[in-house]
Length: 491
Image (cartoon, rainbow, N blue to C red; front, top):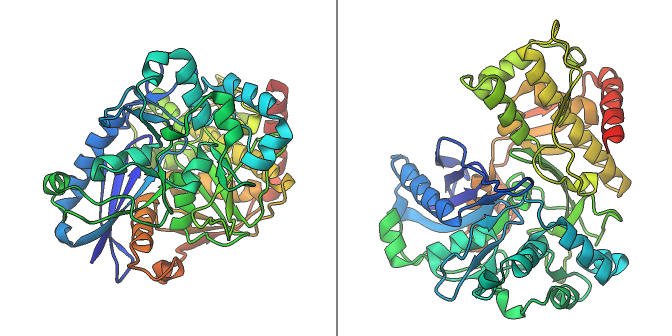
């Protein structure tokens, strides 16, 4: 018996097939091989085509099916993880009305700030646990204000994972964690926020049917099953934003546990049993995958837009023919501190932890007689690690004091330079695991379909593969403080 996990990332689609008995991945595939384009029509805008996601999902599944380790007909449930905060809108025939305004798009910042003022800071923070900010609800308000002819045709709004689920099943659903991610959920009243809906002039009929996150969100359509070589009628039994799902994949369920990821964006995500919020909305609180009205587990999320995206930019512009493993080895030949070169990796939209300011990326202190390729790539990785430290200090201000951080051995955590710098500059040990987002989505599907008795039952084979401990914290502290001083002056 197998489970299928689909991870709808910004760069590509990744799928994993997991054996229920061993909880191990038996097949994985990614599509496309090249990173998916982010359309940026104007400065600070970021869009992608939902139909391109759907085409890529199909190709990734078909690619995985070529693996002979499993029979696709024995897949019993599907789980979906997805890039958070994106807006997908469809009409009554489930046709997409425009490209998705994705998570790193900055166009709705002013709209969200206006809503924050109108609703009231304290009421927004205590009920929504966030400012409306640049999240999904504010993106929808931008469409209403700027594309009224499109807005008038909307039947339902969705997040990216809801859209893929709709294409698989024909059903449109949402969940409390998903609504909280879009800043639609009132945590105090346990309902869709009337204040937000009234302020933006949204009809509640735009919101899909609300279902438990771990439950059937629809059954695989026969024509889609035939197309993908799967069994008709199996459920999509789990849908989660990528960061709560990353926490799930690392068995981070309990209050006090913390996960990190460093993909296109960088995230530290900690679980709490309190309805906490940051007064400045620099970090954000959403309903965790285990949230219920009785057990209010939340996820406190620090997001840095410009992590893997910064590394990708550096690769494409300074070493386009090199592979990431080659660049990681090259970076390791540069000394700690990159010979004084400093990088601020904030060039991928407004940064929430910088109070929604867009500073642009910065490469500072270039010495034309000293610095070489290796120094550039080490400085990029160190700058990304420093941005994590800056955000972690904000989390500490808000009461989170992690003793250890769990991360998947993927993306930037594949680099020894980045991983060790992260540990050294934060001063917190990191446990590395093999699971990634697509594997987590598959395990989540098993929980939602009742194949596993509970969340703990899905992780009985979960093993740490490596623990990194601080080694150069004292040396990095002064370098970090220099970097921070540059950032503060820029802000």
